[in-house]
Each structure stands twice: as structure tokens, then as C-alpha cells.
Image (cartoon, rainbow, N blue to C red; front, side):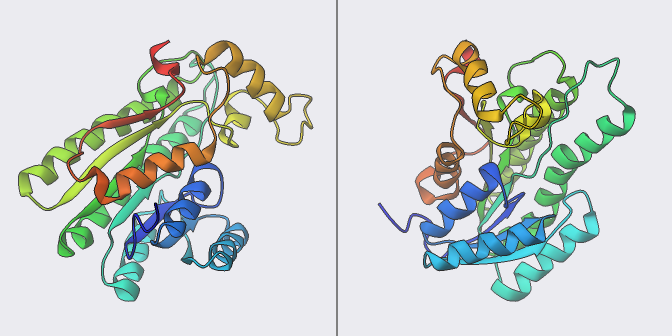
Length: 264
């Protein structure tokens, strides 16, 4: 199957790595013009080049999701260049691990600013443009940490649970207005991405003697019923479905992609 989001304009935050990168590549492959945003401009240029080399369409905008003026600028740019926005994927996020008594207030606030405030600002500023175009799909990337608590990540769990219920409330607002905008949350489990380097103390190159691959494999073997970590591409497939018209009767729900971790 191809062209599942053909002609749609899609904005993806945190798009240069992990799930965001996989989502950008997947949506572009399926026909969307991807507006990728992130703080990492060098990796943004590489992502655009990769998409264009494969025959897709993409642009990159440097973007701090915690900055409301920056959000207003991104949406204004999309309006000016494309005249509409069909898909917003609020993917940017960070994960900080510490016992609650050892977590600093600055880390608590930084994590909340990226994971929760960034999602709020994206929805707030994207909705008017989506409504003007007759509707769209918003995908807020939460986590199984928004469904199932874990020790030493209380701040992360708090932000991801908040994204879950924020999503549901906005979905009801949009449904009441009959504005054609669907709003859903996505809940990845343990996925082989860089966020785990901060959550469980690994390094992609093994420089601290806890290489990501080996450490995640051992962790997921005992913690995940599937016995392995997920792949970013597997989560991106869920983003694609929620972004496409195949999910036209789906709003306010949670799409869990976690190898059954959340019910174990």
C-alpha cells in the first residue's frame, strides 16, 4: 500500500532522531510533505536530504517546543508556505530519571516544559490552522509511562500521564465543535531510541560500559512479554495510521505499541 497520506502537510517535532525521525521518513514515503522541527539543525538538514533522495518532500525548521513565540512562528511559516496543516505529531520529549527526593526542581520543570508544555503549545497554535482547512489529525506522543507507573521516573510518568488526559479533553472540545480535527495519544513502550540513555543510564557507543543495545536487550527480555525492545519504525507505523484517513472515526483514544508491556 502506498500514498496513505498523499498530499497532506505534516509537522513533526523532535524529528531528527528516534521515533520522530522514523515518523518523518514513513509519512514522507507515504506521500506527505513533512515539516520537520527540532533543535538539531545539522541533523535536520541530513533528514531532509535523506527524504528528498528517496523522492519525498520535506523542510526543516529549527524549533524549541517550549517557546510559545517559536510555535507561533512555525505555524505562521506553515500557513505562509502551504496554506494548511493536516497532521501534527507532537513527538519532542525528554526522559530524566531520579528518585523523587533527588530530582531537582529545575529538572522537573525542564521535563514538564518539553513533554507537556510543548504538547500544549503545539495543539494550541496548530488548531486554528487545521480548523481553517477543514480538519486534521493531531498525534500526541505519550508513553506507556502514562499508563503504568515505574519507580525513579515519577517526573516522566507525570508528564506522560498528563499528555494522555490533555489529549482526551482536547478531542472532546474538537468533537463538540464538529471541526474535523481528531486528537489521539500514542503510547510507545521500550523502544530502541536515545531516550533510554538518560532513563536507564546507557550509551549508544557503550562508553560507560552499558551499551544501549545489550542493556536494552537484557532489560526487555525480562520486562517485556515480547522479549525485545520495539523499533522506531514499528511506532512510526502507528503514527501513519493515526495520520491517515484510515483512522477517520478514531479520536480521544490511546494507541499502545509496547509488546504487551503495559498489561504484564
